[in-house]
Length: 177
Image (cartoon, rainbow, N blue to C red; front, top):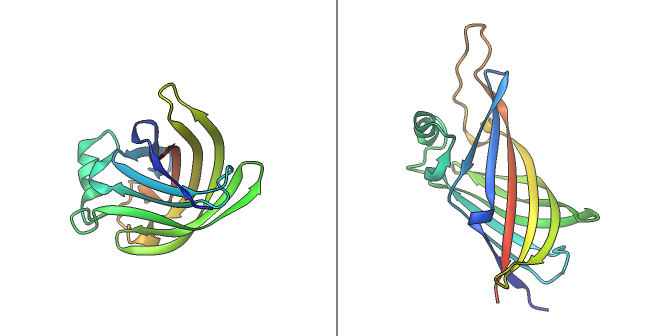
């Protein structure tokens, strides 16, 4: 059976991240320009092959100065590494609509195998006749694994940024005919 192509609905999808700041609160942000494709022949997407990219220049933390710093070589080095990407290598059912997705994640020129938690939230036909599928995806990464090692100390000697970054993706995919 041939696999069906699905593409991301960028208006109804988001990639968000959170990192502990001053070790007391989280700072969150998004990547506003994202692309994703999925190929699958199974109704429950158990054979899904997924890839996505985010444009680093589209990072948005609601603070222009911080966004500029994140794009600099202290963090993402967007002029040299303009995108982060992921390509799945396995999509394994863990029970009713719950999956573990493994794949290769590339950020700042470093590629590592990661695992993501996926919940398939269903399919629906929208008012314009498009078939859409929903997914909630999450994982946590260590910044230093990808060369994002900048940090500073506050007055108490504590680090300003945590090592762990939490990713949350809320995704609507559109079936292509």
